[in-house]
Amino acid sequence: MAGTYARSTGTLVIGGGPGGYVAAIRLGQLGKKVLLVERGELGGECLNRGCIPSKALIHASVMYHDLVSNGAELGVLAENVRFDLAKTQQWKDAVVAKERSGVAALLKSAGAQVLFGEARFTGPKSAELTAPDGGRERIDFESAIIATGAVPMVLPGFEPDGEKVLTAWQILALTRLPASVVVLGGGVSGCELGEFLARVGVQVTIVELMPQILPGLEADLSRELAASLQRLGLQVRVGTKAVGLTRDATGIRLAVESGGSREEIAGDLLFLTIGKRPETSNLGLEDAGVERSERGGYLPVNDRMQTNVEHIYAVGDAARPPMLAHKAYREGTVAAEVIAGLPTRYQFQVIPSVVFTEPELASVGLSMAEAGTKGIDAREVRFPYAALGRAHANHSTSGWLKLVAERSTGRLLGVHAAGASAGEFVTEAGLALEMGATVRDVAMTIHPHPTFSETLQEAALLWLGEPLHVAKRSSGARPH
Image 1 (tube, rainbow, N blue to C red):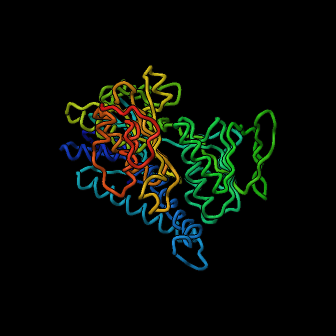
Image 2 (image 1 turned 120 degrees about the horizontal axis):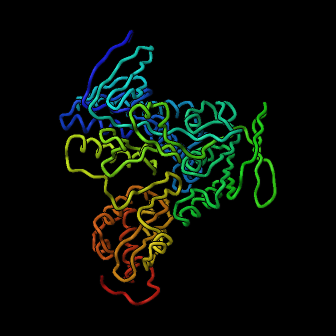
């Protein structure tokens, strides 16, 4: 593109990640003229530097580790098993490229136009696109959707340099395995990628400021993962504050304080993963009149995904937490349907979350502690994977499912699981919560055998005092 051009569209979508591309596809399906601008790759962080590439690497590491650790017990024997990072990276990149081309094809089939470059508002209904070659273009629009995602947060003094201090994006692109890595931040990314590295032979230490890894997650899930990580050989340091960093030719030394004492933790690399912040700067929001929260940088929206400027919407990480792709999908759909004139609202009871570690962690709805803060008299039960036939057949007996329900009515309040395939059947629990199901409803739903989803039905039966595959410990079963 050379020179300056001008064009108009019905809706301008800024950002081609989960929220943006879904909004553009839905608008196209509804017959609306839509133009999507993306400055990097279609699919955003999730597809290119997050959800998909991390799961590809995790999957490869699980295959390798299972063969090395458990193969002989299961009668699967192999000699000279090794993990080839270069080949795994090639496979991961191929997966990402295929998914990215799929997004492009979906946008094309919906009639959405895609331009690459950076968009900046120049007024309430206009923006300027700067193309990669430096060309500029004015875009006039009737409505706009901001879907610019988020970027990694940085601590002063711990800035990533691409050599000794890396972000998750750079960990996902490693070309060689270091001997040791210190992970600063025990959130989802730190635990998932720290575990990936440990499975393939890297010495890993996770340092977390809060009292538990995965802060904010149900406490028992955090404890279950911490124990699993330690069995794998990771060191987990919670309640530990990073106070300094030294970089030299041999690696890094992280100075930490815990319990009043100070020490240094050495490693080849530091993986900095302390969270993300919305990418809402440098968008010309002031020219469009869009308000930005002073704390966090989010763009406040209503249940129609509208900002304070009625025809400008925000979705995904730019709008509000939690920063989850499946939340962004729904928000993008809502924004598109509102623009198209449909009576849509962003309404839900629960948003499920999954951490792709071993064991897999899944959570939806209230924990016992959260039920208590809401004044709900609740009771919980825990059903162990060790009582599940499929778990034994799959050599995956560690883990459990916890079910929380209102004591007097049996109304389901929450489900939290740690174990194989937990992220696959947590959706059933989410549907039950959305529909206001009782524990009895779940117990009476026939689940296929043998599956991991049976843990949900078995936990419901246990809550009712009618367990089938664990010993009954007390009487008092009653219908709900």
